[in-house]
Image 1 (spheres, rainbow, N blue to C red):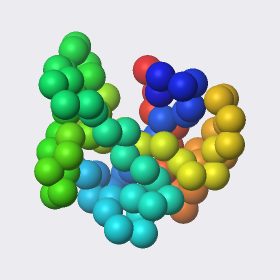
Image 2: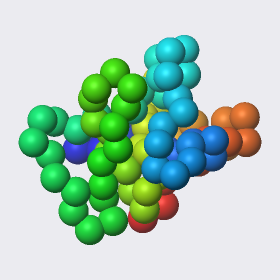
Image 3: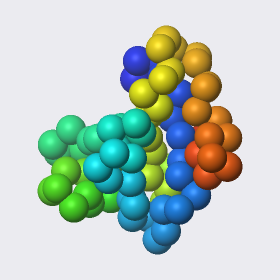
Length: 88
């Protein structure tokens, strides 16, 4: 992200929509878009059920991992076999 933190995708997300809410979103905060953000190339936006917008890459919603403490940490890669570092 803009702060150098690793971004992740969730294998259970389908059709560009997030399926990570509640406790999931507490551990895997969605990469939220500022008001007025615009899609650019392979980066897009998806609507969340709470009315916010989340960034996507190649139609996959992007997330942070609460246990990554500093830029460059990638401790969420492979968690439960469904979380993966977003590959650019």
